[in-house]
Length: 190
Image 1 (cartoon, rainbow, N blue to C red):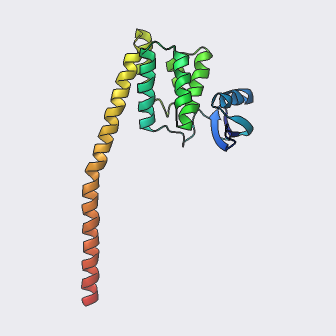
Image 2: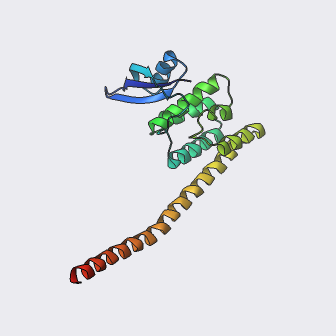
Image 3: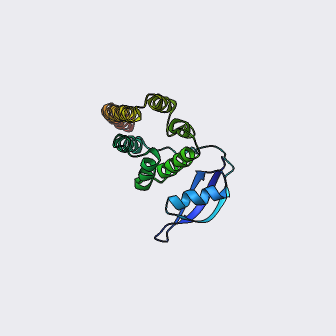
């Protein structure tokens, strides 16, 4: 699918720009309309592919997506309706575009895991394969809960590692500053 750069206007009249992978210009206009945007103009990007390099979705956004998706699926909400609700409530524009792409693919006849394969920088292979197993066993909600718990654990571990690295880094900076001050003092008084 070609990557399109677009300019669109939201309901408040503010200009927004972005990029999205679509089949053609009609698909672009339909997806933007679902996001509450009116297309002003567009051009095809020279870079082809599902997602550009800047298009990562944060881990916290993915955790929220999995948690809310699991809650909707467990409550018995149909898959496409659940995704449309998540698309409309997502704060991150890139996540909205990804969810809109998932809805389009599912309405086009793909399964959820097949639709997610088109976005490898958002949904990694482990995520997709676990979801594929959940689809085969009829336990999509349980799999989404496990994925959400795993992502939460990864986020907590990442935060702990950052905290652990901060103290040695702080000490190293202080040592370097003290050594520089001592060297300056010694050279000046030599």
